[in-house]
Amino acid sequence: MAAFAGASPRTDLLCAVEGKVLMGRRKDEYASGFFPRGCKAESPQQQIVTLHNHTADPPRGGLEYTFLIWIHYLWGMEENKLRIGLKGRREERVTEEMTAAKCCSGPVRVYATPMMIALMETTCWRLAQSCLPEGQDTVGTKVLVNHLASTPAGMKVWCECEIIGIDRRAITFSVKAYDEAELIGEGTHERFIIDLEKFQAKTDAKLSR
Image (cartoon, rainbow, N blue to C red):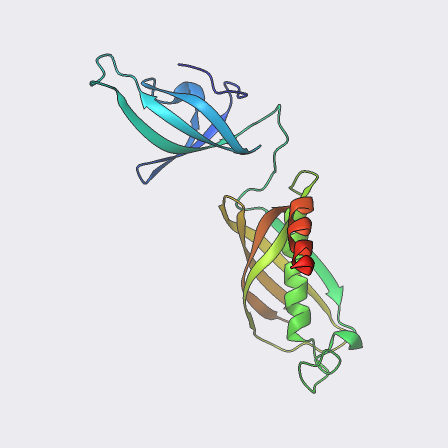
């Protein structure tokens, strides 16, 4: 079987084949009737590969199939370390400046909902950032959160997050926030991996429109 360009025998594959997912198959364990040709990387972590069916007695013209194969290099290339199941934690103490009365989100001196969401987003951002190579980062794209209980100023709060989904550059986290007495918020947060320079340049270009 022909070798993957830039890959090694230990390259792990996540293959989407006709809607079925084959996980954890190594290149040297994959069906010997297939081999890749014309590999073109979308990113250092992913390649879209066209596979050709070369059977012992191929039909006239051969049969060509296109599969999406996500190739995670184990060495030789800079890769991110994002994985489903990774967890993060961050804590802070509620100050008067974090209360609803100070954040223009209500009249009461309790932990403001925008501040709780900011803690959740920061926790997810820090976790993702620690797994990405230099030049990449993430931006928030969606927050779906319920604020379940109030917290007074002076009490410690913390957020726990976990990566529950990865779809190309999109990352989904579960998030939960606690104070020293109980669960105060929970939900999900989504972030998107960006190339920092390109993203900033594209955004700044709006000023010249």
